[in-house]
Length: 302
Image 1 (cartoon, rainbow, N blue to C red):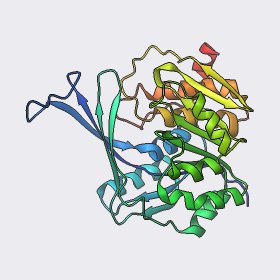
Image 2 (tube, rainbow, N blue to C red):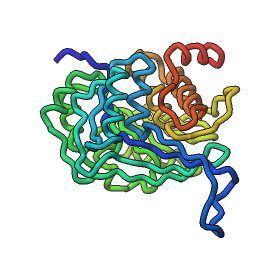
Image 3 (cartoon, rainbow, N blue to C red):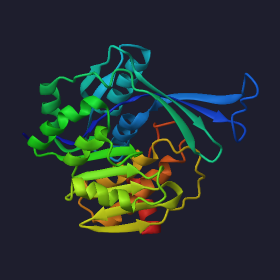
Image 4 (spheres, helix red, strand yellow):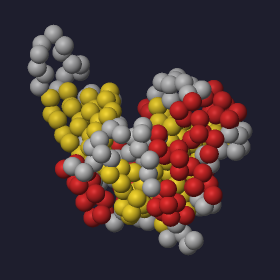
């Protein structure tokens, strides 16, 4: 089938509520804390889909929303963006939600409600048709997504999987995603050094290229048995919100390397630029970085 899509994002999209603290911590000694609370379209599927779209890529989303106000809002935003919603199904449990307690330096504590994602089963033929039209399939981690990994492989579509914040390397929930990935992404938020994790992932899948986001410490790249570290990039705008940063790293890297054919090192920097720019957006996926902006920052930093 003709590849009429650049990327199909497979994952969860939902509404995030960011709760911005005016102090440095929650005061649990009193009943009420005064905060700024903002709702917006977020989560990994939302950030990734809108991120590819902002960089000019033909994008489809495979996932679920509820038959509720939030679900209709998300569907409307995607369709206005021009994101293909052929495989945007209904979750009877409602639209996924996240609550993020935000600290002044941009750090967060996330409380995630994925609604029915552990038991949902997407329509296989519709998903297979969308995946077969895409050059790249970008998988996040809802339980139902693992059912689509074989279809993506059979269609000849390259597979990228984002494991997000890994707690245990031998986590059986993530095993299928690791085995199928051509490109593997994960956050090293729970580990001071991602090198042992990369090496253990290679024991499961030695062919994959691995990128680890390390937050303020930069990122790591594992390819062809070699692990390299890259310092964090600097921008004049302050870090105010780290939601979506890992998605930005993956979108920027994959756009550059897979969809535009650039080398690994240039693509790492473009991924870091995309991630860092995301951190300047307060509770919003509406104004993610464009390809022109990435090019401009790359000329300054590259």
